[in-house]
Image (cartoon, rainbow, N blue to C red; front, side, top):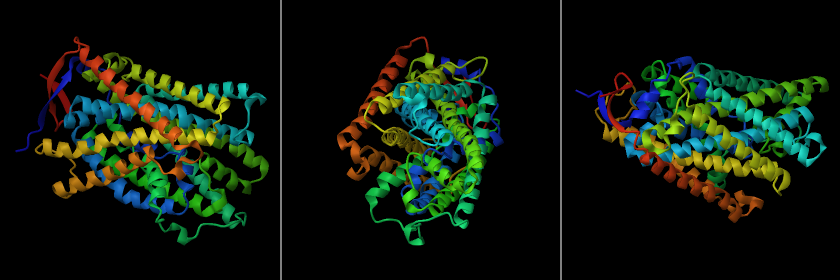
Amino acid sequence: MASSQIREVTTQATLEEKKKLKKEFNFFDMIFYTVAAIIGIDTLGAVSSNGGQALTWLLISAVTFLIPYGLLTAELGSTFTQEGGVYEWCKLAGGRFFAACGAMLYWISNPLWVGGTLSVTAIVAIKTLWFGNANYHFGGSVVSDAIIEMLIALVFIWGTTWCAIMSLRFGKWLSVFGSYVKLALFVLFMVLAITFVFGGHASGSHLTLADLVPTTNWGAVVTGILPALIFNWVGFELQNGAGEEMENPQRDVPRSIIRAGLIAVIAYGVIIAVILFALPKSQLSNASGFLAAFQIVSSVLPAPVATALGWLVALAIVIALASSGGTWIIGADRTYAICALDRTAPVLLGRFSGRYGTPIVVNTMSGIVATIAMAAAILVTAFGSGTTATLFQLVLGFTISTTTLSYLFIFPAYIILRYKYPNVPRVYRVPGGMFGAWIVTLLPLTYAVLASYFILFPLDSTVGSLGRLTYELTQFIPLALIFLLTVVFYVWGQMESRNKDVEVELNISAGVGAGE
């Protein structure tokens, strides 16, 4: 008979802080929380700028990456339901240091993303749709422009952070409402795009069915298309950061993943198809892709209506971006808080609020890191030789690399746990026995390896005007610092002798842990 209990070494601090958790995460919340995590607006241009084959690769990757990844996560998330999801899976599979490396990469990419890519996109949205030009200067000068940009970004960053600090009962509504806003934006865009095309406003060379055929230029695929697609697809496991705050994770995790995955595939497939087929090839852009596309198709409206709608759409885009960032902050911060409580980082970083039941210290640290990233991004763009497009490329490239590298820890953890705990009862199990388990491990792992390698060592054509040395320094120096920080935090956590190790039994059938 399969045993429903396994033993794990945890800490006194972990057991104490988990007493503050509240079960406020239900099935409905989990669906739209995951939708908010997966569907993003900031990378639509990066994908669609690759032309018709981007849609083909979207569908190919949905079958060969998203589905196996979803099956893998459904089994992990419904079997090992501890708070901190990713960290706990990696710890059970490879030990504390292995898990600490994965958790650090998984966490750090998010405040950098919020402070960099999302803040930049939010500012560009306001400038483009409120003032008609992405290069508009607030106040008429570089200095005043930088100051006002920072003020806008501070509101964006700390508003997002505040939603993560508040109780999950409140914070989750940023994800749910943001999902609605994204889907509403997509519907609005599609209506305008159809009107634009059938009204005879689309001029120039358009994509044809022949453009959908995947290119034989594999370098362009692995450096330009697949990394952006994988970055768009990931997020299924994020809800398990709040595993012990779910009402019924063993029942709801697989069901929510299936529904969120279907919504994401349909939403991405339809919106990218509309962008590609509605706009002439010459108008497909990168950094501000969705914004540029919206400006073009909204030209079918009378000017006063288009202007008023643009103001509302800019606000909607900011909310949509905040929901993406806030969703990842909520899940990844909980993951790293549990990591810190488990003696792999300073225990202070893992403290949960007794009032809100949230990891308030690491939430605040995320806001600080995002603020530093934002200030650096704006100052480099304003007073350096960089441009918004260049900055977007650098920040997005680093965010994708840290994110995909973290999955090099997560995907192997699944197959290791299959072998390490074969008799643990699994409410949901990937079909096909161990053969099926290997398939759903190797397919997404291959994507993650390829994306990680080629985002770190891209082709010369991808590097462009930056130069290879400049590009790779912006990737490897921060990664080296992140690894060093992981080691320092790990040693720090191990030296905190007051946080004693405690052996607990994890009752897998009930989805909870109990100390002995």
